[in-house]
Length: 258
Ligand SMILES: Cc1cc2nc3c(=O)[nH]c(=O)nc-3n(C[C@H](O)[C@H](O)[C@H](O)COP(=O)(O)OP(=O)(O)OC[C@H]3O[C@@H](n4cnc5c(N)ncnc54)[C@H](O)[C@@H]3O)c2cc1C
Ligand SMILES: NC(=O)c1ccc[n+]([C@@H]2O[C@H](COP(=O)([O-])OP(=O)(O)OC[C@H]3O[C@@H](n4cnc5c(N)ncnc54)[C@H](OP(=O)(O)O)[C@@H]3O)[C@@H](O)[C@H]2O)c1
Image (cartoon, rainbow, N blue to C red; front, side, top):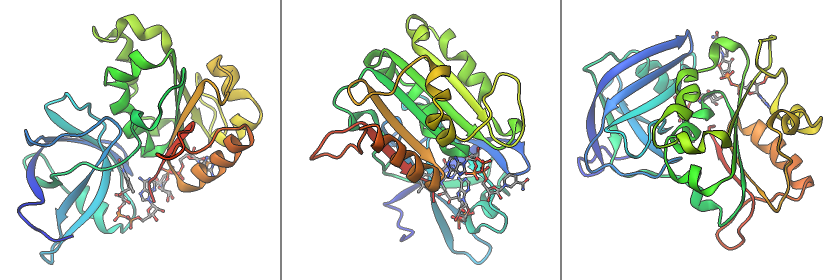
């Protein structure tokens, strides 16, 4: 991407919080002109030692109404972008493309009653933005967030998730929400133990949510690991849930992170 002054703004890091050795959250200032829909992503740029800028897509965790931007990042060993990003400290600058992108947004669905948000790892990010926006609570009767990680210490934003129902503007809808964590490589109290795909196949996910997946009522968003997305899409297709396209509205919307 060209480093054109027209295309990006320079924002300041306000806060960086490590979660584990390979996961961290960061908050930056937000340009007043930067607009996005909950579920979209921005392209972030960091300067490398050789003077070039490296760009990567990052979903916003924060809501479109927050004055700041929040992101949740992996650190890929020797990753071109995350090696640089993870070195940044408060007051350092981060480039943010002026335009937001992406179709993992609620307008992918024309109808639906029960919303499923299925994520692995940092793929939870766009769902946290969607859940902090009012629209989802008005549109859906039941909302299930599923968050799959290898180890329990990788479960980020637990206070934010637990606190959604206490927010003034969401309190009347809090009964609609079910959060299901699944931890795949250890047992953890309060979490399921198994991949999203396994839990779908054996019915455990629907039992835990108290909701049955049906093409008529369910709308499903998938985000994170591309193999999880492929495998889950196949399972959903077998149940009659299809990818939602502009020419053919359906029940499933996806975002692959790599
Ligand atoms: C639309 C979109 C939104 C994204 N949003 C986020 C986000 O909110 N947070 C985030 O951390 N990343 C996100 N990513 C991934 C991000 O763009 C980069 O791939 C990531 O920052 C790693 O960059 P890198 O140059 O260090 O490694 P890369 O060379 O980009 O990736 C190297 C390898 O690391 C693994 N990898 C990359 N990203 C992840 C990840 N997020 N979780 C687990 N393994 C990964 C894959 O195996 C990949 O092949 C998103 C990607 C897309 C396409
Ligand atoms: N340095 C460290 O300490 C450390 C620690 C953890 C990860 N990492 C590295 O970070 C990278 C990303 O790891 P991550 O844990 O964030 O992402 P991930 O490998 O995508 O795993 C996240 C969750 O997705 C599940 N999953 C993976 N493939 C799936 C599929 N096909 N269907 C359904 N579920 C699936 C995983 O289950 P499973 O557990 O069953 O795979 C896990 O619960 C990896 O390259 C890893 O090596 C490093």
